[in-house]
Amino acid sequence: GDREGYGRRREQTPPEVRAQKEREREMERRERDTRTIFAFNVATKATEREIYDFFSKAGTVSDVRIITDRHTRRSKGFAYVEFESKANIPNAMGLSGQILMGQPVMVKASEAEKNIAWEASRQAFQAPPVAGPQTLGTVPIRVHVQAVHPDVTEADLTSIFEPFGRIDHLQLTRDPQNQAQGLAVIQFTSHMDGMKAAKELHGLELAGQRISVSLGPPDGSMAQVNEIDDADGFRLNAQSRAALMQRLQGKLGAEAIPQAAPAPVLQAPAEAPRPLHQGVLGPASPIPTPCLLLTNLFDPKEEEGDSWDAEIADDVKQECEAKFGAVTHIHVEKDSPGDVYIRFATQEAASTAQKALNGRWFAKRQIAAHFQFAPVYAKHFQC
Image (cartoon, rainbow, N blue to C red):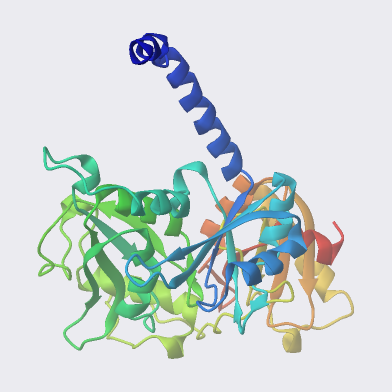
């Protein structure tokens, strides 16, 4: 009798109540993401406590999650750090490039759809899926990576992309002389893992240049990796390969790129561009900001007069405001290899300028344009 009475008293949670609780959990998760940053290039020996102490300089840290290998449980050099307040995020971004256990930590803002670490932690404890119709999550997908530095190896790319999911194939494209062409194709077992990797890593600065990550169709064979067809967005021929090499040369310096015979349509540069260097604000921001550093604009040894830096600042500001948008601050670093720092009124204007100016030739000098961390810029220039 008592058991029957208990059974009658027990009631299931109404569907609308369950739905409301799920919505509340989702809102809480999204709110946490606004207070979270994604750290990469973290020393693999760094513990949660050491990462906690490192980021506590930016504000009160409420949680640290290290992304680990699914099999060995060892750190993959990535971590998510959650702060008590989203007001701490700019300070955390300003820590990018600072040293932890002998290597610079890089920082990106996290977004709700990119919260890979916590999702991976949940999936690790779920039971294997029941056999049935194939879902989108289990459909393989191919990811294209462009602008890969020639010194970056397949092992390097594996260590960066593997934390997001199982990789079926990964291959760097090479020419008949076995020279890297700056392109890689990666096939993920899971469609969702590939999408997450593309969203998180697109624009990541790797070995001094920013990679581009895009999605392609699944393909079980990697035999045609050196000749991607038009359906995937582009095809490399001799001319486009030469153009790609010239663009890479403009970013990395002539000595860093194996030189091939140029296509007839390309003109040899009048002066070999200088290798990338780190300015007074430290490493470049891996994500767009309103702040830019233009390098190789001038040679201080060739300038004359007492106000040549002010003249350059005026010229650059006038051109930028005429073509891209309002400039709120500009500074010419006189004792530098041609550095000009610019802060635009909007991030959109800075992004337009970066795309237009990066690699552009000016007075026989090739300009490089890189985003700078806004908090670091504001603190240094007091603006």
